[in-house]
Image (cartoon, rainbow, N blue to C red; front, side, top):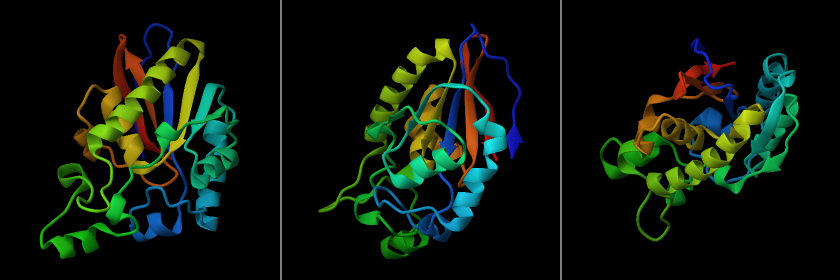
Length: 204
């Protein structure tokens, strides 16, 4: 858990990005894009444990990915969902859905990384990181419009939230590689002297 101090500028609220709790595939390291898995009991307990940190916090908006694991995490964390946003869906991994990095690397005969190599080409292509960045840029535009009213919570998935964080900081989507976010952990995106900054990360 890492906490980073930082003042918000201009009276703007903060964006809280929360990854869903543990699922069977997140525990095993399988890439889980659009597969609509339920939380494990462990994941439900992780989400409930967030109530003391997030449940009493007032949000101007709480937006979730349409997938059940995100909505359930928000519910158990005590958040009142105000909208479901398809732009918060996880990366579409195409033919790499359900597979681990080790399995993909073994098939390719070399080390594979989503951040360096992207998703599978061919007959079942996934999204490019630029396509994911275009989605999260729309989310950030909508969130910025609400920040004068207060904080905004985004409850979604690991890779999409890492790309979103990179874009908040003005970085290329590949910089999401720098922002590891465990299951049921959250980060806080804010401002310092009106500049977008990371004010907290991997909080539980």
